[in-house]
Figure (cartoon, rainbow, N blue to C red):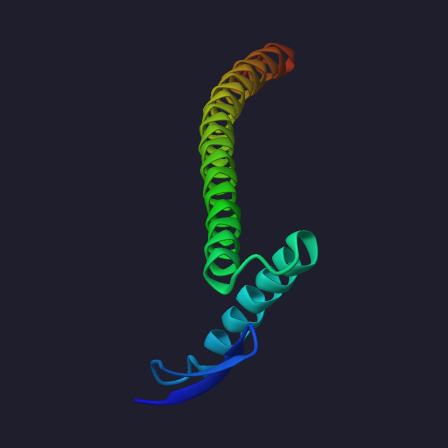
Length: 122
C-alpha cells in the first residue's frame, strides 16, 4: 500500500492510501491546510485543535452545500427528462396525425385522378 507524506499546519504526516490515489490525497491535504491558514489569518493563534476543528467544519459545510446543489441539479435533470419524454410523446402524436392527413389527401388525389381518366369502355 503506497504511503504519502503531507504537511498540514506545518506538521508532516505519513498517510497510507490506495494505489494511484497519492495525488488526490496530497491535493486534499493542501485544501485542508489552506483552510487552516484561512482560519489562522481570520482569527489569529487560537490553538491548533480549535483551528483544525474550525477548518474541518468549513470543509464539511462546503461538502454539505455541494451535496445540496447536486441534489437540486439531479431533481432539475429528472424534471427536464420527464418534460423531454412528454415532448417526445406529443411529437409522436403530431407525426401520427400528419401521416393520417397525408394518407387521406393521397386517397382523395387518387380518387380525383381516377375520375379524370377516360373510362376503359371507351
